[in-house]
Amino acid sequence: MRTPQRSHTSILAALALSILVVSAADLLSATGPPSAAEPPRIDIEHVWSGHPVGFSLLTERDRQFVGYYDTNRQLTIAQRALGETKWKFTRLPSSVGWDSHNYITMATDRDGHLHLSGNMHVSPLVYFRSKSPLDASTLQPATPMASAKIEKRTTYPRFFTGPDGALLFKYRDGKSGEGNDIVNRYDPSTKKWRPLIDTPLTDGVGQMNAYFSGPEPGPDGYYHLCGTWRDTSDCATNHSLSYARSRDLIRWETAGGKPLKLPLSPENIDIADPVKPGGGLINVSYNLGFDNAKRPVIAYHRYDDSGQSQVFCARFEGGRWIARPVTRWKGYRWDFGGGGSIPNSDVGVGEPTPAGDGKIELSWRSPHESGTFLLDERTLEPIGKAPRKPAEWLNPEGFGKIENPSPGMTLQRAWDQGKNAPAASRYALVWETLGANRDRPRPGPPPPPSMLRLFRLEPAKR
Image (cartoon, rainbow, N blue to C red; front, side):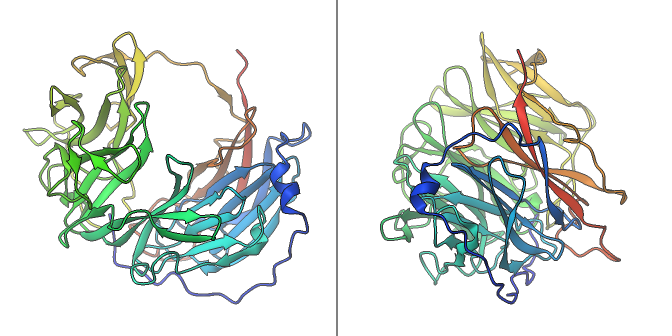
């Protein structure tokens, strides 16, 4: 689903940015909940709606930050104090083209400095760091991050927290069919990044690249990594469902505990299902979860022996990985291929979730059937639909409504990435765009901008 790079990092004229005058101590000590007068829906501003690209919402202490592309496609950060409805805007020197890969991601370090990355697809690293804690108006370009040599063809930025609480950053160096995953670690005392390990985390050995989710912490004390390898930009060349785990993100091993040499490559990683290129495995349709015994279970889509599309689950049992078909659809095949962001995925699978009493919950979506199903934990066979759970959160008015009158508009959402948001509320962004278009410009004028809104969801009463 990848396309050749388009020049989308043209530098705009620097804008005069106002500075929020407040001490770092005051900001970092503020943890109050939103005001009772705060409305459940707050308009931010109109945004670009010509194609979908991921926005970012981050709540930290009593501040909230929203990263998005405005009507001129300029990378913008809106900031407010919880309880207020007025936003302060910072326009950054970066603008998006037509590439749906160019999402935005944000994080804060232990001192409250804001870190932001995004708007890149096989292009130089885009990274900003704030000079003052919790103050987006002081964001400044901070590249190179750790290595000017390898930060020239970057994609898929991700901030996450390591087992020791350190701020980490993962990205791909390279392109579809030829790329490595890199992980950096931030030192707040020196305000500098350095490589977490002395090699890439993954290496496609010049012949392929990894599409791995994670590392994500699991209930068993390990960080887990799983995904596929791809030979070219054609998404049909995904193959070899793979897995690795680590307690410290430095030393990695197989599901059976055998040490793995870094970098992880198709030649030395744990293969959960040796699917061949063209076998129906795709990097947008898999998820790792766990059963009731805390064993990792990978749910994914591929073709069965007769070439039909099916949902499978792979689990490490008795010293080896065993892949079992979960569905047995007849006469259905999702025949995908090509590059660029796929407009629609026919098959989607959720995260296997322990449901107790020897059962696992798994959701899937396809033209054949959709829903959340119960699997027998022993056999991974479906045994019926999962009972409908009561809603945990109440949706405010307008949360799922499309207002832009242009044909083909779809609803986009981004959930709060912050870990310090008030427990009594859940925040989300909502806006509307046309669907993906393989990262190519659309002919004719773009649709009118849509309003980007912040919604505050309240817990459902029990």
